[in-house]
Amino acid sequence: MSVNEKRTDGRFQMDRRVVVPKLVGNPKDFLIVSGLAGAVYDMSSLTDQGDYFYGLGGAMGGACMIGLGLALARPDKNVLVVTGDGELLMSLGSLCSIGVINPPNLTIVCVDNGHYGETGFQKSHTNRGVDLELFAKGAGISQTCTVSSEDQIEAGSKMLRRVGGANGTAFVLMTVAPTEAPKVPLNLDGADCRRIFLKAQRRAA
Amino acid sequence: MNAPKTAEPPVCWQDSLFELLVENGVTQISHVPDAGHSILIERAANEPRVHSVGLASEQEGVALAAGADLGGEKAVLLMQSSGVGNCINMLSLMKGSRFPFLTFVTMRGEYGEGNPWQYPMGQAVQPVLEAMGVICLRAERPEDVIPTAGAAMTMVWKSEQRVAVLLAQKLLGAKKF
Image 1 (cartoon, rainbow over the protein chains, first blue to last red):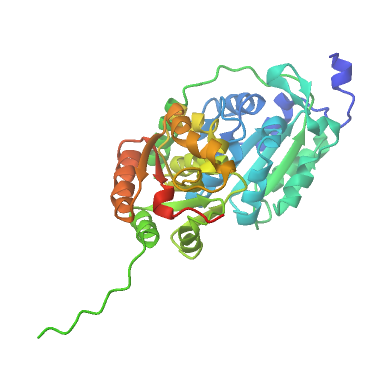
Image 2: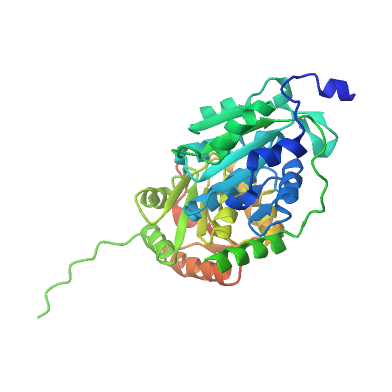
């Protein structure tokens, strides 16, 4: 597939390496869970594998519900889930299970590049008309927005950070170009990641 | 002469199991609608100490349990044997990261089952769970349930294991067809 063909849809323009950090801001303001592939690279890079971050290297479709379990357990913290279009398409029911509870300390960011980057940039359903923000709305998630251009980042960031108050879960769809996420080394030892996360939370308690 | 003893109302094992879970600090109970779990689901919905989380599909409850653990809470997944099949790949999250995991599975497709559609998954539950690193304990009689659940909780939260308590169809009674 040519680069031109990948870029035919005007929604998928921004460089994730630039706009994901802009959207999230200081990652230490959150407990963060990421899905696999692009999202785990984005967040491993942004957090420098921080001890407040747990990222998946597999278990595709798990990120949103890990975020829900964490958000319910830690109402004192804001929980940020970062996922991709491919992972979210695999677990759309999770949006419904989250929407009916609608915890105000949970935000989901879907970095949507319209492709399965990890397996060779095959087009995903979002590149063929599927709108994941509409899914989130339909699931009953009360605050949603789409960020497709640089001038929309500020509004997305405000929603993500609950500027003006939180009355439920927020969902931010960020559409980006089908380009590589930052290729930082990952810690793929899940048990190690869990232990680091738990230790940091115990220390902070 | 002693007055004849009035019979105590029988306490069903479902109520005892719910109380055991809550007393032991379970705060997240996730579930897909199921006749065998209906008492626990109903009680979870009305228990202020518990987050009752309805699921669209069972694997969501596996991931939820991982998140609860990261937040220092204990979660339990209630499902039917058919739901075990929906959980398989998500169990790699639990085994790979050594998350504690406890599920109660109401069995179909075994003792006295009248619906042939229930057999393929029902008969596969234990080998499939064991292949994914989940230890299976079976309860066949009402008096087995509480000791088995107690043993399972020790295995899960003291030894950080993954355990499924299989509530046998013999215990639950086969659905009539």
